Structure formats: structure tokens, C-alpha cells
Image 1: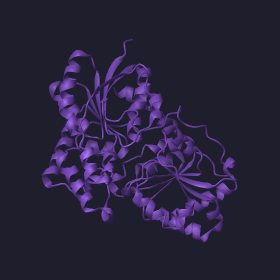
Image 2: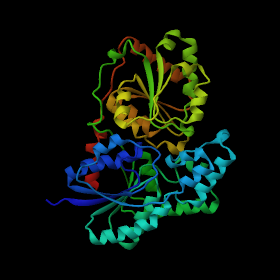
Image 3: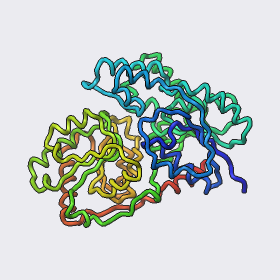
Image 4: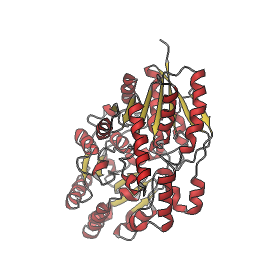
Length: 430
């Protein structure tokens, strides 16, 4: 039976690092097993916030990759203010950490580049891909955002080819994401963002969401939405090992990934500070490990507390090494934006956390989708940013189990989140 072709329009592709690249990299890896040949359309000269050469090994050897040049204004923004480098990853200073330069840059970003700073790639891409689609048989087109400018490419192609089958994949929400309200938008800019989002929802044949709540919200906004979460690749996961092996090592709480100010669990740092001051046995055994990029303001705050002597900051490391660091931890930390509108965000790293079998401590809004996953798998506990005493009790209980080699691994009901099974679900939708 002849393979069908799926054109995947994505900004992030190896050697890009971070979670944004992995979703469609893994789909592309397994789609051929289910009757689909992927074609990748991606920028020739992107400005990636992170690089990870280790992800190149997952790129299928014979995959067709089509590239065109992109112009991005980030070099200009970084000249205005060095902290604007965070913009490339959707991050920026908030509250008291904002300088006047940060405020100006955020206002410009939100009001002049709609939907985002990759908007200058939209028209050239529509023109290029219009010709490409005329010359090549493509059965389905996928746009993956953020950056949500890529959905504008899909919208433009749909206008030119009304019968085109188009899937708009939202790795994160657009106007409902937490930092949207921090963009200092004018009323007309806010209206334009919402009009564009609505046009995508109404014109895409299918809108993919990465969480249950996002799919519900997209449907309420007029989208034909389906949830396919992110997941873990069994070929990436390090083999679980007995926690008893860690008995004579440190009790390590690890955060793997990017941690910005809007997801900073200040109550956790306070609890850990108290435990170190009050409990010598805990203090002698405890290590707080970061593997990834942590906002400088967060590090400065932690280093002014009793935690200072217990921090191991590895910086950004390749994805395969990050998986090793997960496996060599006692507890794994995951954080989300605190407001209720973010309860549908499921950070991609949770699935790799699950694959290690290690216990997870999570922070975010009440009744979050992450809480549902942790409950279904028995892999840990979710807390709000107001919790302190219950957080303290949870950590101490895990510490006591660790001391005696009884901190058990949990891997129940996680097969549904394997990348191969998720790709099979995608193929059924296709």
C-alpha cells in the first residue's frame, strides 16, 4: 500500500533544543510505521534559544527536509536589552524585575509583531509552499505552534487550497497562555490576536491540543479539537534502577529544563530552606539539582538562602544526558504557571519523568491536568503555590523512604504516553 505524505511546518527542528522540537520530531520518527511519509518545512537560518545536537540522531535518515530563509528581529531586540534573549523562548522579566527597557521591549513584542516575531516568515512561506503543493502530492499539512505565526502559514494555504486537509497543532495555547496578559497589549492588538486565533480554529480541519483542558477550551472557541498529549520515547528512557542504589548518595531533588520567573515555586524554596535549617540529617543528605536554564533572578534568590550550599547547577545539557540526570535523582520537580487558565498545560518533561519511574512533585493551579496524570499513574503529587506544610510533609515522607531504600518506582498505566502509541493515535486521526 502506497504511503501517504504529510507536510509538517515547524519552526523547531534539530539541532534546536528544548521541548518544542521533540513533539513532531518523534511523530516524524514513527509515522512511517503507520503509513505516512513526513516532509519537514522549517527555516534555513533560525534563531534558536537552545541547541541540542544529540536530537539529530532521531531525524529519520531519508526524510525530506525543505528549508527557506527567515528574518527575525531578535538581534535588534538584544541590542536594546541583553535580557531580550529570553523572548526567543517565550520568557521575559516580570513584576519588580522589569526595567524600563524590558517594559518597552515587551510592549513592542506584543503590539508590533502579531502574533509573534516570526511573522515575517509567513508571506514568503505561503508563496513558496503554494508552488510546492502544486508540484508535489501532499495529503495533509500540519502547522505546529508556538510560534503561532506558523498557523498563519496554514491559514494562508487553506485560503488558496480550500480542499487542503490542515491540522493546526497547538503545543501551547495562544491567547489563553499565562504570559499573554503580560504582553502589554493595546485593545486593538488584543482584538487582532483573538481574531487570528479564531480564524485558525474555524478553518483548520482539526486542531490538536496537548492537554485535555486545552482541547475542551478550543472546542468551546469553535475548533474541531482533539487531545494528543506529549509523551516519552522508550528508546530514550534510561533503564530504571533500584532506589536502594542511592542509599549512600544524596537525596536529590532535580529540576530538568527551563525555569522562568512565571513558574518559580517560591513556596518550595522556602520549605527546603526550613528543612535544611531544622533537620540536620536532611541537610547532610540533600542536593537541589538543576539541569537546564534557570532564570538568573531565581538563582540569585535561592543562593541568598540556606539552599546555597546544596545547589548543583549543571546548566543546559544535551537531551540524552538530561534523561540520565532524571534517572539519577530521588525526586523530580515540575512547575506550571499558577493561574487557573493554565491548568491545561502539561509540560512535556512530565512524560520523560514518568518513564524513569521516579516520584514527582508538581506545582501549579488546582485541578490541573498534571494532577490527573500523577493520580492515574501513582507517580507523585501536585500542589498549589500556596501549599507549604503539606509540601513539607510530602518531601519528608519521601526522604524517610529514601533513607531506608524504600522509595519505590512507579510505572503504572504509562504505556498510553509512549511516543509510538501516540503516533498510532495520530495516524488514526489522519
